[in-house]
Image (cartoon, rainbow over all chains, first blue to last red; front, side):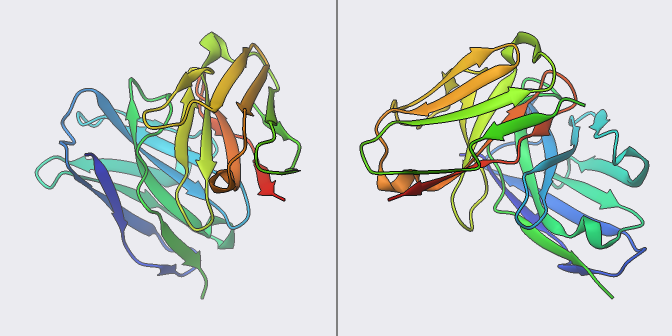
Length: 121
Length: 107
């Protein structure tokens, strides 16, 4: 059964870079059936798609975040990662990683449990 | 960007009642590329429906999705206490976007 787990710092200072890693278990990141995505959810709000990556390294990003986001993949560790630069308090959210069948624009299933990241000095 | 508007904001119903949740898109969603998620308190969202009407694995048949174009509906035919959650719609015909959710409360 495919499972995903986010990891990384829970507190990031304003103007710095948020970095998170998603570790996949019960499956391979190189499975060509799946793309891999990052989604975030600010407290009390709906989710927001950040971006999606294929194991080859091909990426798709939310246009509103594209200038600050890098998503990368490490097939040797069965992991993919998120970097979001120049963060502000508006980037405070629970960050989820998820599997995405069929393509970069698709539904998300399964999801990791989420990692709360707070941006504060 | 396609904006999804969900209504009502909160739905308060008794067990056994029928719940009808609406999701309206600001422009037509291509190929009915619309999904619904259930998020229980303190948990990650869980896929309920994809392709507007296909139930995800393990989802009870009391959940059904319908609609096309700009208007979509998630129906819970007979509400159970464990259906207490916030439900989100998501379109993936273009750069994915989510609605703001409908909270289902059990009386």
